[in-house]
Image 1 (tube, protein in one colour):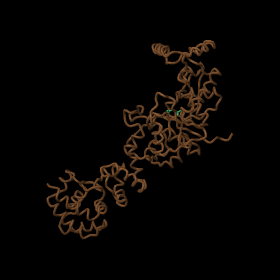
Image 2 (cartoon, rainbow, N blue to C red):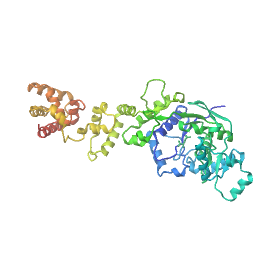
Image 3 (cartoon, rainbow, N blue to C red):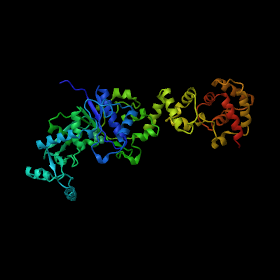
Image 4 (tube, rainbow, N blue to C red):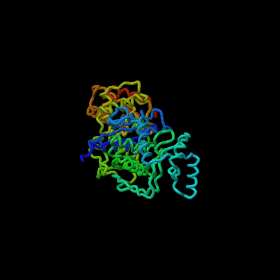
Length: 486
Ligand code: GLU
């Protein structure tokens, strides 16, 4: 048989935001599809009405688009196997539940919530796993008909066989076995007529011709129920791949309490999509070497499920920051320019305009010093406005009694240069002034940096002068002489 085109899906339940674990699942599915010339599908699993959150789907789609994980089929771009919202497929699930009921592989359960609670409490007392006791499986046909005619609410449950080993193969976990005694008679259709995740997920994966189910390890214990469903329907099982858990640095399960878990939070903090994607790709996968820096198109080329680890992946935010630095450093300057303009618009400099050529020079001078776009503004505000204060520690250390007079002389020599004087010209002028004033070069350089930037650190001082331009430099020197009193 010719292998079908691989088809994989990301099937989130919209909860309001995209969790970083969800992003990892989406990314691995996407990469697998790209690497195998397959199709990547987005399916919205929204049958749990209690968890419905207004705007959650739109937000999810927006976030996926922001990171660049484009899907071939999905709720907003359609496809051959739609609709891609489970809430629009209810009749399909009902029809499938009916098949299972007719086969005897599912049964109606009329137990009241009170009886189920009591049952659970009794099981807890003797330390038994909470499980339905198949009470309603033993109702006669007449009893069932009677209850139906009385309109007693019921759910449809999966009939899990007794004393069987339910096994399946998983690309990452290898051969997995569950004793059927540990598997509950899962509710498939709830009393409100909505399917549970388990039924809807399996039916859709089959109907949407999903070949590989790639998802988080938290779903591993649901898989025996799913493989039973595949077998009951007589369907070919997909290949399963359960991805390792995401852990905090202390090896506990990644939680909101220990840091941000929403992709949006990282975006809002200024992380680049390239860095996030790179970081998330490494949460459980490596190419077999020490390489850590990847662009999305490289990941598409190198990713393979065979190299996904079994053991939990530690979420290390420092690595993410380092990757952000690297991706920002290697980003084409025109792209950084767009991001910097956005950032300026959000900052206190929003009303001001700067020429592109000017901003490009700023970017070039600060590139090696910033990990985030906003740091261009935070670390070097003097490029966007003249300093309104001077770092007192630097003043104390660098501003000497003779600094005003030396800087005044220096401003005099700078005034003889062109407005667009080069680095070398500024440097020569400074050296000449130092010589003529019988002064060490440092006695000019340090106060000069302080005068033009208000700070003691930054890019090379001559780069600073060239970017600001002769007139602005002279103006700032004069202001500093006036303002700095020691
Ligand atoms: N709707 C499930 C979730 O929210 C999908 C799990 C799966 O991929 O099967 O993650």
